[in-house]
Amino acid sequence: MKYLLISFFLFLFVGCSKVIEIDFSEHNSKPTVNALFEEGKTIKMVLSKSVGIVDDIPSVIATADIYLFCDGIPVDTLFFNGNKFESHETVISNANYSFIAFTQESEQITSFDLVPTPPIISDVAISESTISDREGFQLNQKLSFTINDTSAESNYYELVLIKHYYDEFYQDFVNDNVAYYYTQNPIIENENILQYYPESLIFSDNLFNESIVNIDVYYNRPEIDTGSENINFDYTLIVLLRSVSENYYRYKKTLYQHWYNQDSDIWDGTGEPIQMYSNITGGYGIFAAYSEVRREVNN
Image 1 (cartoon, one colour):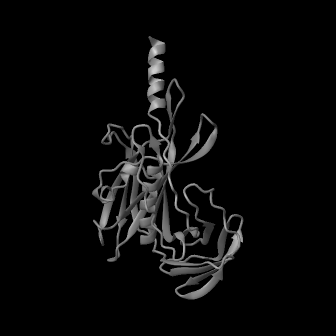
Image 2 (image 1 turned 180 degrees about the vertical axis):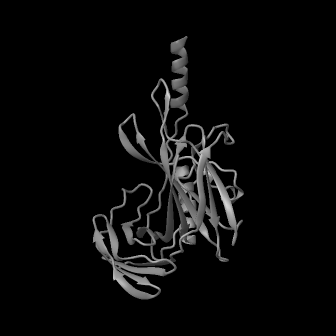
Image 3 (image 1 turned 45 degrees about the vertical axis):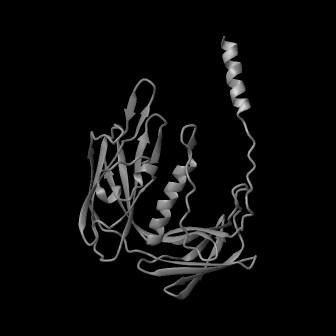
């Protein structure tokens, strides 16, 4: 009987197979820019060529003339350094940066972005937690912090958490980005990004413009399962709060949806394609700025 069942299922799979021909239109390759740059640091830009869905991995463009402007004034020419172009000048806040690039194939690409001023953060603290998320998964740490949003204009933020600790099992120091966040704060819930398991929390001040607001975020402390027990580690939480431009904000929101939809399984398949946000004229990609403040809290 076992062999009959196996033969029957093999017949079903083989008998139901069908060859489907898909006609991919020819891809119009364009220069692609990847440059997220920070106040107080140089601009680093990866320049490559876009490829079609069935083409090879894009190769880095190593030869191009890239001119940098600050508030409309020429300030620098980017140089090629390893696998990217880099500026000599460091970025200043509340300034408008733009560039124009010419490739060897006579392609011209441009973009611009305003560097936001650093955010105002206070009352940063961590404590124990017993909260559970909507699926019943318990998170044992809570981060609380306060943001003072002083500008009447629309502002955008990003929160990145890093757990720094000594891993006694592997005998080494570790910087471990928080990979799962949970919050019940309507400011972040309003962004509809938690469902995509983002690597950071990206949000706007739509619900607290020109206000002071407290935000609680939940996560788990570092631990390792040895098979016989769970070992918890004392750690320092590195809190990075960024003021980001609108271009940065819109790019990151589509990026997390894109990454999430790349994962597939036998039940849900692959998600729908996401149109990535781009602010590049003459090509694809992102040229966007942010300013960052850093706080460290010991557990």
